[in-house]
Image (spheres, each protein chain N blue to C red):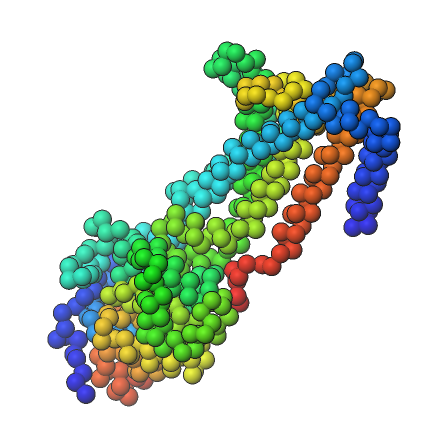
Length: 259
Length: 273
């Protein structure tokens, strides 16, 4: 297997001196990191170390929470161009469409399975009605969900199982054709089998996207990650390569560090 | 439950008993006619029924879009810092006695309307509709607001993360979720507007006629009851108030039943865990 080394790749996300605070309490301090396309970077760290806040800084979703303030630079390579998302007037709808996010628990829209995908396609992409069904089917296939839901697309989305819901969320994001995928503990609410399915899915997608995933599980990180960032108190304490993650002595050190 | 049912039935019985002579005595045609000239024996209450209906509909026509707009403003369309003061103001409006609305309207709005439209006395359908719309506004806002607040926070976050604008989220996600609240606000707001007495009595002018324009004076059924009770107690005119009361009672009961149906309807698929 030809493993691509992080150093060889031109990054698609550059974060420099990022500070994020809520109501004056700083959650991320002077954080710098970069992420490459075609790779899964897993972020590990204790709860409260700022992992989710960091992900939300990349699509400016922290602004949906009261009292948030962000300093520093986050530059993303979108459609071949570097965009500084906090300085340039890049419309939020455009940014969030290009930087797709899947959250810790399935965040469904309270509509049918098909409408969960169709509504963003209609509202965000402005896709004509006749093109939507094909796109919905394509995304569901990409998320390995099509066979399970093809005969009940009009059923309410919440009737799906937890794992299916999470894959539906992923399909919904993929339908919008993002370039960067932010995945926040996608298997936190799932059982082992459902988790494996989501992990397989992420691995199958990594060639085409820059994937940044937060995880609470070291074994998951070892299965998924091409690189890992260890967060401590709101900044990056360590960066590990895939080889580092597999090495037993690193593992022991990590276990003590994180858990 | 038993007591409230019994009192509702008692009211209905009372109204029906007193309205009975109208039905039994063959005065039905006189009461349900278009002329109110009690001294000539014409005691038609239809102009008042029309007045009540028109006033309630116009007040709602003003208040409902405004209420919806305020809720939209408080849920993402407006700046976040304005949300609290705005909703605080609406809460404050609920605590003002209705008579104060009427009083302030007599002092400020009536002269204003008279000033802008010199052909009107200022005591008009328009003045009453404007005042009443302010009075029913909190009912509408608080009902819609209560429903919007129940919408799962994750739904909002999901919409934002997908790239929906606040307006799209409100229109396509929150609105449909709050549809029962939207209906309840319309029904209950209309019921309040229809049942209001004091504002209509103070600023609508009380002329028992079918208005031809917004600047005409109108009389509502509620104001009619208040006026007749205050001045008369024997004639057929007096009996007309029982018919008025019966109409109001039946309409508001119908509205309440509609509301109950709405409330017992299946819950939208908002939460699933």
